[in-house]
Each structure stands twice: as C-alpha cells, then as structure tokens.
Amino acid sequence: MEENPKYTLQTKGLSIGYHNKKENHVVAKDINFSLEKGELIGLVGSNGIGKSTLLRTLCKVQKALSGEILINNQNLKSYTFETLAETLSVVLTETPASKNITVLELVALGRQPYTNWLGTITENDKKHIIQALKATEMMSFRDRKCFELSDGQLQRALIARALAQDTPIIILDEPTTHLDLYHRASILKLLKNLTKTTGTTILFSTHEIDLAIQLCDKMLVMAPEESYFGNPCQLIEAGHFSKLFPKNLIDFDVEAGRFKIIN
Image (cartoon, rainbow, N blue to C red; front, top):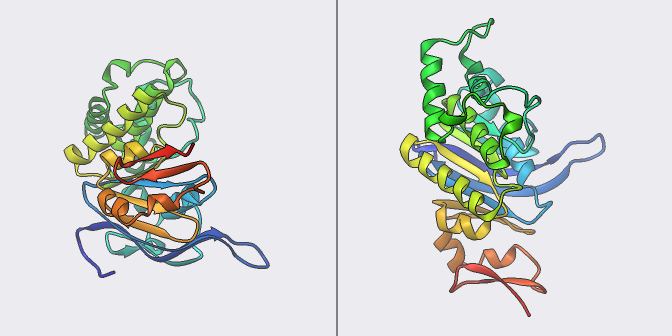
C-alpha cells in the first residue's frame, strides 16, 4: 500500500485486540484499507467480530497490537490527542453524559478543540455550529433539551456536534441503533449527503448491510477468517458477504444484492 496524498485514513497489516500481562488477545488481524476524501465507508460484520474494537483503535482510544494506522500519511502514534481532535471526530454509541443541555449546547461542544481555556465561543465557532445544525436539519431543535429528542433526532444532534468539530474524518459506531427502518435510512442518507457536500470522509459501523450496500462508496467486511475492502459491487462479485454468517439460517443473494432467509 503506497503513500498517496488522496488517502485520509489508511491501515497496513493492522492487528487489533487487547493487551494483558501474559499475552495479547487478537480480535482481528491483517486489516488493510485506504479511505479517500469525501467517501462514505460502511464497516460490517457479525456481533463480536471486532468492529467497535477497530473503531476505538483508529481513534487512539485503544492501542493497536501491530501494524500501522496512517492519517494523512502520518502515523497515528505521532498525533497528540489535541492534534487528533482537529483531524478526526467520533460519534460512539454512548449517549451524552447529560441530556439536560440544549441541542445548541451539545453541538457547541464540538468546538472544544479550538476554544481557549475559558471555552470562549468566537464568531468563527458560531459559524461552524450553525452550519452543522443546518446540515443535519436540526436548526429548529436548537433550543430543545436533549432529553426531549427522539432517538433519531438525538443521533442527528450528535452528528452535528461531530460536524461542528470541522475535521476531515468522522467515525461513527452504529449510528442507526434503536431506530426504525425509515430513520435508519434517513441517517445513512444524511451521512451520504454530508460526504458529498462537505468532502468529509465518513466511516461508520452498521448492521444495516443491505442499506450500506446501496449507499456506501466502499465497505470493509470483517469476516471470521479475514477482512475484505472494496466497493460494494466488487465485494458482491467476490462472494465476500456470504462469508459473514453461518449459512444454516441466512445467505447472501448475489443477484438481489441482499441477505435472504434459508427455508
């Protein structure tokens, strides 16, 4: 995998898992991918396969066991948490520590990497906050308390916070959890639109494989023995989605491009 300025996030021979005193517990190994500016990338795999572990490793929350992670051709190890916060923003599955704040206050938290020690919001900060609220269609909710929001509205507010952080890369861990089909599709369509309108690279984990196939530019498929990366059509033609789950209950229909239940 050669260095290329068009890549915003790359991994080379990455192994992820957990350190302990006796030995390392490897969750997944030899993960290789290259993400470009303005792409929407879906990360899929069965429960326990290591999707969240991979995302935490990419965000420097968890250490890699081996291999490299490059952001803008610079090794992740060289980033301080302060400089990383200006390059990569994260939306995890955890809800805000306090929901007794307004949507505006929540989104404003995205500007923390740029404010002074007093947390003073400048006119430039306000511009980014308003842009993020408009992009996620949350302007009309700006004064509403977070506990008053539906799950879908709260997810949009959290995405707005990440947008306000104004980073070239956004990583989301299962952003459509607990949403109905309409709102799952709505959130993923929003992410797709954001990549096109802002040029942001967005990587998200999801169980909505059928929707991701329709909307994503690229996908990373984490199967039990190996991980595969490419555009959805390439992955379908290579039969990689069929490797995700045991075939005693469901299988991937290559012609239809979706999973089906085996009778």
